[in-house]
Amino acid sequence: MTPLEHILLTVRDASRSIANLSDATIKSVLFDFADVFLVAEQEILTANRSDLAKMDFDNPLRPRLELTREKIRAIAHDIRNVASLPSPLNIVLEKRTLESGIELSRVSVPLGVVGVIYEARPNVTADIFSLCFKSGNACVLKGGSDAAESSRVIVDSIKKVLEQHSIDTNVIHLITGGRAEAQEMMNAVEYIDVIIPRGGRGLITYVRQNARVPVIETGAGVVHTFLDESADTQMTTTIIHNAKVSRPSACNALDTLIVHEKKLSELAECLIPLARSEVEIFADEKSYAAMVGNYPPALLQRALPEHFGMEFLSLRMSIKTVANLDEAVEHISLYSSKHTEAILSADQNNTERFLSEVDAAVVFANTATVFTDGAQFSLGTEVGISTQKLHARGPMGLSALTSYKWIGRGSGQIRIP
Image 1 (cartoon, rainbow, N blue to C red):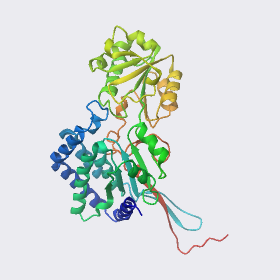
Image 2 (image 1 turned 30 degrees about the vertical axis):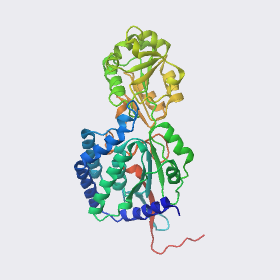
Image 3 (image 1 turned 45 degrees about the vertical axis):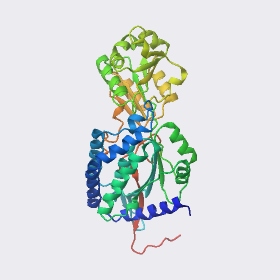
Image 4 (image 1 turned 30 degrees about the horizontal axis):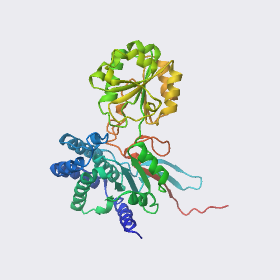
């Protein structure tokens, strides 16, 4: 048994102990963790500054890595939100009596041990523990080296609270090694029940292709918004700016604006706020012609093929012109990562067709794509945003960290052939 296998075995054993905890105890631990998290603010910020010092200033991951006093308070708020949510465990999902007289129930239970591999997002460390602990799961975390010091301090705070409540601290483990340890984690089918990668497309693809443990894919967002012919110009202007600028490094930010060709005459007007926010645009031929002279030349480029299907994670985006809804849906089908897609339209038939025909975890009408978020969906926070169809889809909250088991209660029945 390798050193990491020994650690994972202790996590597996510790996961069973959570099943004996009452929801009241779990809630108390999480509220105390939120308090300790705030008390450790300066220590966390100091560690985070150490991480930031090792990262290039223009790295697109930097906004995700950086912690501030406001972010720390927001994380503590999310921890309390999770604590206050109803327990997802021991819920009778269905119940019936069989012909044999056996009373059969299907009951929600924890997954067991949840492994999460993520990039430079120290907030994920706190989020994952909160969601896993509330749903009765132990967690094994492999954070990116970019956030190593920040994650270490956060995990130390968690373990301090667990010790105060006499709970096995092995219900959480932070793997601090490199790719070899990550590979061993992804192959630990005897100890880990599911692996969830949270990060860019490269990380997700790597985990999917190399893991033997079952994988739930999350994260990579190539996000489109279709500007239909009938859309209100003022509403459109506000929504597009919010979808691109409010959280540009997030996976739910707008990447490609698809414009109905009859809307091109209004396009430059709709994008005035983007110019003020210095958003660089890669436009196809028709949209470029409509914007040239009406958008800052330093921020307007001709689109190349690679600008479609790209997750920009920055103040950059592309524009594609289409003749109708069918072309918009076809473009999305070709380039979407099945994360979040949206339509801006006053045409009810087009809206309903879009919502029905577009294949994505979340599909919006007349709102900004940045609402794809666990907290916005009243989930407290999220493990990630699943882009697959099996087990979980969209923002993953507490219920996504549960499975179920069948429980049969008999009175001496035997099966007769």
